[in-house]
Amino acid sequence: MTLVSRILGFARDVVLARGFGASAATDAFFVAFKIPNFLRRLFAEGSFSLAFVPVLAEYRERGDRAELKSLIDATAGTLLAVLLVITALGVAAAPWVVRIFAPGFAAEPEQLALAADMLRVTFPYLLFIAMTALAGGILNTFGRFALPALTPALLNVSLIVAALAVSPYFAEPVKALAWGVLVAGVVQLAVQLPVLARHGVLPRPRAGFTHPGVRRILRLMVPTLFGSSVAQINLLLDVLIASLLISGSLSWLYYADRLMEFPLGLFGVALSTVILPSLAGLYARKRVGEFRATLDWAVLLGIVVGLPAAGGLAVLAEAVNVTLFHYGAFEMTDVRMAALALMVYCLGLPAFIGVKILAPAYFSRQDTRTPVRIAVMALVANMLLNVVFVLALTHYLAGGDFSAGLLATLAAHPGAHVALALASSASAWLNASLLWRNLREPGLAPRLPWARLGQVLPACFLMMLAVKWIVPDAVVLATYGPGGRAGWLALAVAAGAAVYGGSMLALGMRPGQLARPLINNGPEQGSR
Image (cartoon, rainbow, N blue to C red; front, side, top):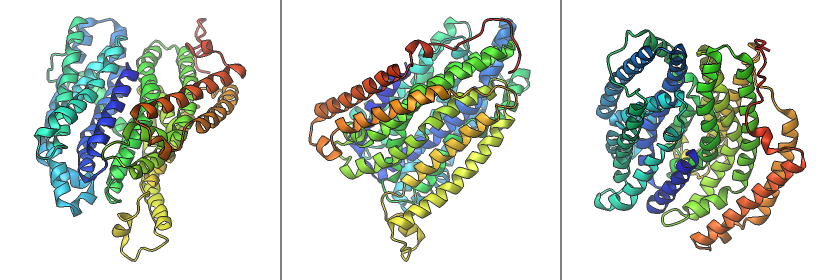
């Protein structure tokens, strides 16, 4: 289901790139979309879900249906009340919110006004999508993963319809995309409600700030507001600095991030979603051996899939951008700039996947202090690296000439946006490394499969050589039509997969070794 959603996401980005390109107007939309989207990931998929699911799993293990329903109703009422206040403030203060997150827009009053107008439309999306996350968390706890995983596809469908069918009716066509975001939020929540009703857990929101389960969730949420969403905070800092760079930088980073999110969402987020309720249930039953075996399996799968995904995507960066986006307003310069950012994001892709796998090991045990400490360290490192890398790269691109002034120099040289991708990748590696190290003390750190790495790394190298040899240069590829481009890209991907798979088999890896955790069903031995 995640794959279906990601494919539709590519279709959405193809439509946006072809119709709107990389311009000041698209930069304004991406800011108006990123702000509620950031809050969605922070509150809904990050802090809230990672605090709510373990508590809900604990209540479910008790077997008291009335107590479980009481927690769901109280949580829904509390979340709804908080979201109504945040949404009202966001809509009312839209111009000031844009100034905070994209200060570079202040120098362009029309761009600032456009972003603020669209933010007033997109901000309520936060309310609907956070309630959708509540519904998805309930369904995941009951072992239902398909519908919550497919639901994001509705956002992609809504934006495609808005871009193709609705935008011609707007004086400023890009504003149709903002309405597409809002409609998607309503629809995403609506499709989940009948399934919740069928399971007898449809929330009936009630004030619940005094409910003991809600109070525990709120206590867990306070630190996880930082800990579980440090990657999203990093991306938002990128937006702030990118707004100071040459026009188009925000769009180049957006398209690169979207391509990097394909393997991250397909494997990293999917693994995280599946193992969180599983780990929470195992911890509640004190099945420590199975807890660690599940983490071992997830790390192994992340390595076997994440490393070739990063290597292949880096080699195909220009080819993918040409195939998907190089139409209409998206020019070859945009292709090269987005591809550069994508290559650098790929350096951090295994770490981004690692964070998605390791974080549930803490949240499933309702340990929020450790991830907070790690998150603060990674966040501070990212902020410092953002500044250092951007200044260093701009100094190189400008030949050391800042005589026009710092801001004018930053806004004059294409390519400086790559520094932001590099800082995000570096901070992801720091985050993942510290998460792993701090699991060693309780004896829960997943064992790194060194033998498997000895198989994966040479197989990746051979795969990258094969892909590089097959795929044409971006300029040559651009001379083909959409079908020709897609054909060459499919051939390169298929050949790369065949070389990687064949190499892994030759080196001793068998598919059955990745099928499930190797769990010892004997008596529990406690922590190891």
